[in-house]
Structure formats: C-alpha cells, structure tokens
Image (cartoon, rainbow, N blue to C red; front, top):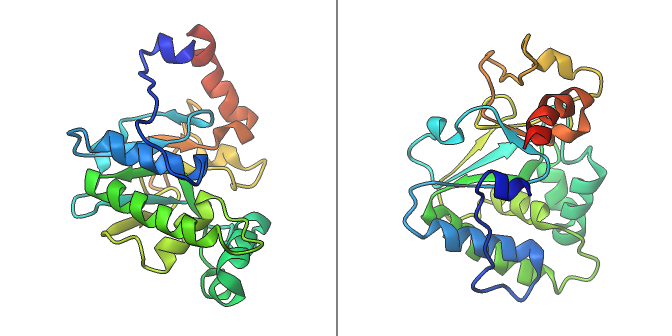
Length: 218
C-alpha cells in the first residue's frame, strides 16, 4: 500500500546469485544502477526515512560512499559485528579492525561502476566464505571486511555518523536521542544541519512519533 501511494516501482531481479538473498541484493543494485544513472542510493526500506535530498551532497571523485554507525560503538565491542569478522576472517583480522566503528550495509551510495565492483567483490568473497565452517557473516560482515582489507576495487569514501549523507542512529544511547534533534524534532548532523537520511530510526519512540503521521496519512 505504501509503495502504491508513493508510486514506488517494484520489480523482480532478472538474474540472481547462487548464494541467496544476502548476495542477490548486490546483483540488483548493479543491474538497476547500470540503466543510465549517474548515482544510485541503495537503502533498507522499513527503518529509513528522508529529511532532505541525499543526492544533493554527493562528493565527486568517489565510486562508493559508505556510512559508519555511532562512533561510541566499535566492531570489537559489538557481539554481532565482531563475531561475523572473527568467524570468517579470524581473530587476527578482528584485532586489526576492532577499534573501528561498524560500516552499515543498509545504506550505500554509489555510481554504476561502484555498484558493479561492489557486486563482483561481494559475490566473490561470499562464495569463498561459504566454504568456511562456522562462518556466520551476513552481508555487513563482508562489506566491513572488503573495506578494511582495501579490496572494494574502487575509490570509496567512508563517512562518519553525523558527518555524511546517512545518519545511522541505532547505536546512539537510549535516552540521549533528544540531543540530536532540533526544536521541530528533526534529526541533525554534528554541524547542526538537517540530516538527509535517517537509518534505524525505529529504535527510538521519539523518531517513530516523527514518522508516524506521514505513514498514517498515506
């Protein structure tokens, strides 16, 4: 119903990977973005809303733009992200990158070249790790590995939370989200400007209340 109301076009993938949905999405990204677009924004659906145009602040010179999560959360300090890395690429690699904040795979800005390279590298690595006993990584684990191992194959910009196109709020401490809102309840970047894209908003009642009137009216 929501897709129909906003005239969102849905379609089936023309081709799929042999790995499953965690890889199929990257096949789809490359397919769609290669149809004459300059930039594409791949995003989760359920827990994302827009406050401004995400394409208005794209920086030239990159093929992929990725979003970090909250700086207070590290890969090593998250039981999910750390286990994805440890189980597939080992304790040594986890130790090397543990102090970094996780890169979120739910929102990715890219050029056609960027999404083709991302598809190829993700499918190649997912195929390899599928043969590793005990490997539990979802696509986010693979994206973090490829970025920190410098294996994405194209020039990539990693934007910290609050300083880029996407404000991924999920790990912001509960009870402190009001510190990141303006008087109208809109989510702000660290410089006080309105964030273009908000991800993982549904973990906070304040943000759910912000979005609810729009969803209900549709």
